[in-house]
Length: 375
Image (cartoon, rainbow, N blue to C red; front, top):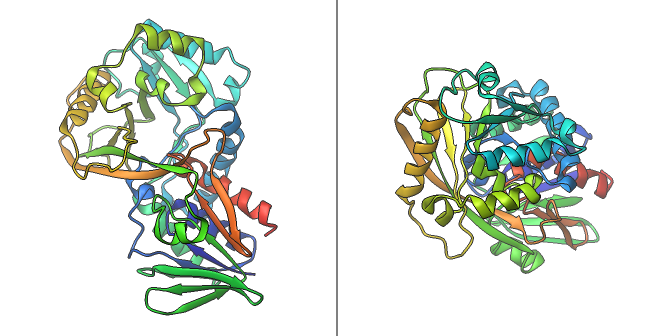
């Protein structure tokens, strides 16, 4: 079968990989010279630890698929390094203890560590905290190099063609198949089209499917110069417990009642996440902004907050910040849905809105699409 995929982010690229693995031919269109959206502006985290119960199987399956992809494409830089959520108050520790008592704690790879054991796992963490919730199932990839690395691997199959700087303007189907017209007037013919618009919910996506049941979320992040030592796991702070549904429960409600976030963290709906890139620098974030129109600049206060928290956990000054940026992703309005997957016309599917879980769930979502479509 000849499959056309519109959108070069992680969802589009994962769908291309899944189709090639199943023996199909793929033509892949991306409107930019290189994908520039949420996929390349994120942490690259494959984040199992905080997933809700209904997300957990997909997250674990996706981690398996990332490991398989890494065996085929080592350049994606997959590291099954785990994570540590560092807990600085008794209320945060109580959330971790409640989570550890749940039946799925082993599946998530959870262990609660005292400070000495935390430093045994990650010696760079010489700062102040009471405990660390270790998740051995978490991992990371190099978000800025993953997409071109996967595409280079797919091109070697002889069944994959990538068209950069190619904006799909119209996708229509008839008895002969699916036909895509681009912004140069060219036509691409296929048996099936999968449109993965990312956070671009107008234009082609709206023409095809109307107003999708999605909202957009904006976040701020930053990158430091090399740390000079190894940060052996990904890092989260206690505020992250508030933003991941896998931690919901009585203990979290007690934490929220007794321990408000700092004014800056509350105003920007913040958590700290951090992962070390292969070049040694730290990617640190993030904020959450939900009300559009989004601002076009970045605020300094969140960066100061993130720097302060990270330095407290490390017990040392951060290296200089060398990059700051904002990104936007799309999120399903129904928290019970992993992604929007709809068929607006025969042979045409729109897949969008994993909501900050694109890197974590991308391979599993592509596998689900392939199974649903009988590929």
